[in-house]
Amino acid sequence: MPLRVAPQPGESLTSWLCAYAQRNDVTWREMLTATGLHCRAGDMEYIGWACRLHSHEIDALSDATGIDSGVLRAMTLDHFAARGLRIVRRPTRTRRGALNRITCLKRFCPQCLRENEARWQLAWSLEWTFACTRHQCLLVDTCPRCLRAPMRPAPLIDKVPDLTRCTQSADRHGHTICGADLTACTPELASPELITAQQVINDVVAGDTAAFTVYDPVTRTPAHVVADLRSLADDIAQTRFRSTDITRIAPVADSFAAATHVLQAPDIATAATRLRNHITASAVIGVARRAGLAYDTSTRHALAGAIELAALDTELPVADALRYRTCTAVPRTPRRPAAALATLTRGLPTLLWPAWATYILDEGPEIDTAQRAALACLAAHVGTDTRTPTISTMLGNTVADFTELLAAMRALRRRQDRADVLNRVIVLADQLSAIPTAIDYHRRRRLDYTHLLATIENRRRDRDPLRCVAFEYLSGLPRAYAPWFRDTERFAHMCSAIVAEQALSEPAVTEGMGDFLRYHGIEEPIIAMPALPQRITS
Ligand SMILES: [Zn+2]
Ligand SMILES: [Zn+2]
Image (cartoon, rainbow, N blue to C red):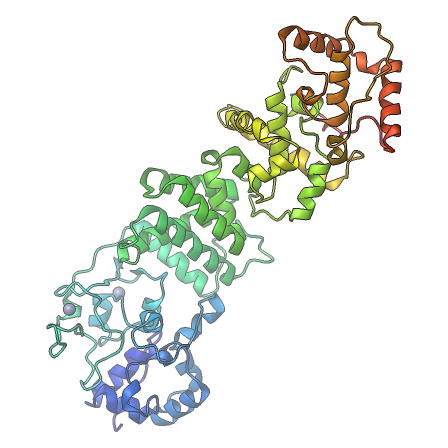
């Protein structure tokens, strides 16, 4: 090549090679052959080298053009690998597949093209570049005449490249090209918010993370921030736009600007509020689908996932809010393994201890059976992704209890103090998993209670209510499961009376219950539960 052409700062390798060929008036085929990038006629359209150059390609290119190898490397997408851009040159023989979609020239600023001899910036190929901060406009992603992407995946082989013209075919057989003048496009002006967002993104890609204070400054890296921005923007786009529009420039700009605004919040709660404000009015998908996106993101990007989960908090069923701890300052993906869940449910009675139920609901001592069962079941949901029916069965509930249990769980969602209640459930779950309880409720649920208090002195007219209450106390199961239970109003009344007069703490009854446990070879206290937290009185 007789005439040498220097690359411009930030220029893409494809653009520079095209400019080089144009200056020397040679075709793309001749250019590729001269630079050693392609030797065979058949592979001229595989431009995997725009992703990453092999070292022998760099050497050949450097020899042919006199450009330093470091400069050449910086003109490929590999330059952004440190920011988490996944660079693959496989499969090498992809013709117009995924590889060419990320390497091809697809967005541009018409004014930059006019001012810079039609040279295309490498940054325009990045998914997060949507605006030109110099000219305060959105990048253009369609040809003004044929309304398709402005460039084919690779330059035309037997033409002298011209980067100011649309290269899409103008007829069905591809013999002619559209040829519209891309520099004559009128770009859409970008709002100051969009330009600011683009500048913040450019800064973080360049290594400046100062704008993102939600991270711990010690561990914060540009790659972290870029990864969180991309996953937030992707989920925002999927939430707000139809899938056919998602890659168009306006939705891309909108999603990345929203993601940048969200991630610049000082904490997760503020970020979640911002995210909610961005999407509530405009979501085109339902809560279940949004939750799926958030769950998926939380497994790969902890912070972005936490923000998305927190933004969903009040819209989720209480069981899911507990699984992902969305009501806390740091929502996160479940990580309680099945074995740990088994240990936890061993320590939990089917009906939550009345004292804990009272504490969690912040109500009087009269908390009904369904609510206590629901609270125990919910405590076991914290931080696990095991399904509700499995958890409920592990806790000794029968299928018949299930409808009532679910209704009681759903009722919690409508409470004014929902977040406080859920946070107290989490306190219980965390205590249970930190300190093992002294009672194996799993064993107690399966005991034969036939002989419980069988010989207790019959000082009341009817012994059965006392035995039912003792059964519930020892086994943690509803007293309706006791062999002596009668489903009448009078019986229920008698049971309540026994609870009210604390008959279970009478020495004879305590002794009888102790004897029963020893008879079954159980060396446990009659009852044990995690210590209640001190209530902060305001
Ligand atoms: Zn520009
Ligand atoms: Zn066109």
